[in-house]
Length: 291
Image 1 (cartoon, rainbow, N blue to C red):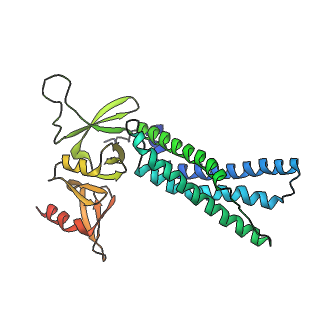
Image 2 (cartoon, helix red, strand yellow):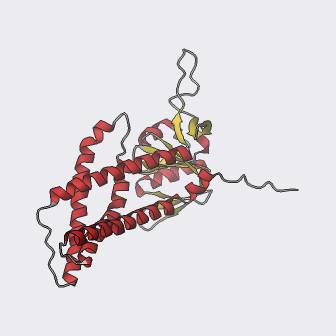
Image 3 (tube, one colour):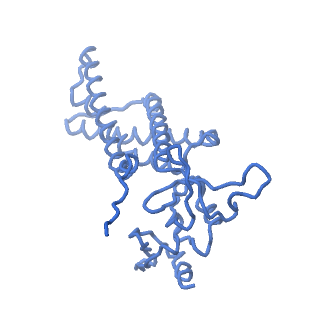
């Protein structure tokens, strides 16, 4: 008997499988090129104007700035994921993002000054920053805005690649709804211009991600624009249980429960995935599996 070979993965699936190292690599290369490029251009200006700064000073200015920016990238990634901007609610986020730009600039300048001070001390000199924070903030605000825009556009493209789920709604006419809105058994997924249905029972586990709940289905992830609490209230409580403040699990996919000394637990799913279970929900999970 011949064995069916698995369907070849698409280019999108191959990229999604390596997206994390690619993302980290892009940030590293971007900050490296920024540091080197800015150092060279500032050094050319110093030489042209005869300002008398040493090459190591220029390198400490621009290199320190690039390293500080790279160190703060994870914070911006987390922040924009936790409080994303949407076309219908962007104006509500403006004050929060304006405040975040100030905090980000203060952290960037603080790290930058610390590194420059160390480099100057290494050379037996004293670094003086002066009162240039407003100047630095105007530059940092543009950089912060650029990073925010890049992250949002990139996440939008990723959602298009991996597919974005939505609840099936009632049709416009007076006929019966396509799917019960209160307890949906299927989700509509739009992926690269195509639409297909995902059965709720096929969802293995769900993880909260800001304003989205990521549905994990057979090795694929489909973001649904919903809070975890909203989704939990609409799924079958006999099958889907909260196991963590940011996780739901399909009990039909649960293979074993591993207790931990801390009182928490690890849930091992049938596909080998390990999901955290906090002590707050551990007894409820055990009761549900025993029912």
